[in-house]
Image (cartoon, rainbow, N blue to C red):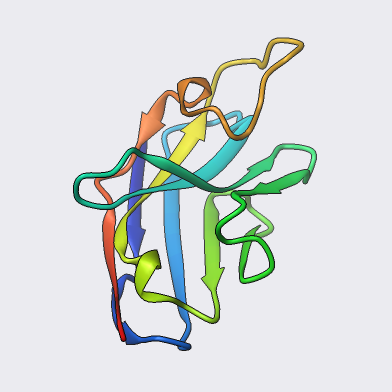
Length: 126
């Protein structure tokens, strides 16, 4: 399985960026895809996730500003980031879940995902 992110960069506060991730190597598709981020010295943080059924979840810090979506092939997942803040600065990782979910699984749990990209840097200047 390979995940390749793109779209990161430097943007001023209040601006927008759109991250993209191509997921390959999953002929049957992924049960879920998500975005996490990690800033220096901080814990990895859930940003957004989308299930095979189209259900979505967002981290509290980005709710109302970020939106996750995927294309019709479900091989590409996007993260639209609006109203960016300096505290959104981090390395953003795309992730996919290829294993069948158990009954109490959560999009927010990083342990649910088994494939990760290398990350794309987002820097928001004040």
